[in-house]
Length: 269
Image (cartoon, rainbow, N blue to C red; front, top):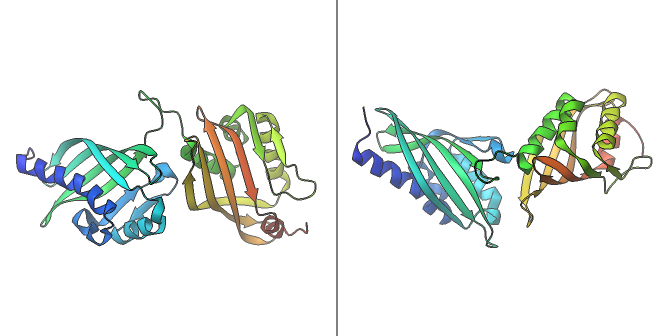
């Protein structure tokens, strides 16, 4: 059954209402937008998926002043699935307090409920390349870097770094380099560490991702979680400043917590 004209009006209003409520801080009205079991997919930003209205509200509150001050939705395209569901694709422009802007695509699944249309699934994807190009941005490269570290794949790691990349350790221990130059030197050093060291990364926990004035650079607060053959389970906090161009790492400043790393390995500095 085709969507009625009124359905399309109601869906269009719903998509537009999201920006108004969010910008006004009326997060307690999120139930007007989403189903109770909504999934809000932020994988493209390295933040995983949020499940349920309350988790969306908590994430927005945690982001605080880093939230955009303006959400502007455009280019709404509505496609009916059946009598009770529809797909909607729209584009969003987010304006930050400093005047910078970013563009995203919202891919939504809507369900018809007794109290009207509601979003049951939303995937947010950042636009980072012109004319449909799909070059990986810093957040996507960050996720690939994590996967390569978890799988300990030198080939995957090599594909991530530009030939003339620089990997720096501003905080380091005696005998550990503070700067690696070039893809081969970086990957060979990392692979040697995997072979000789007791640490096995299993997953990462993202604490925060910060944009910078350079759209190709992000600052990441994270923890690497895993198991040490010497000491058991570990959680290593660190901060990464990552710069990506043309889908590859050109500079990575890795602020490792050297005390925590030494403790996980069962070694003294």
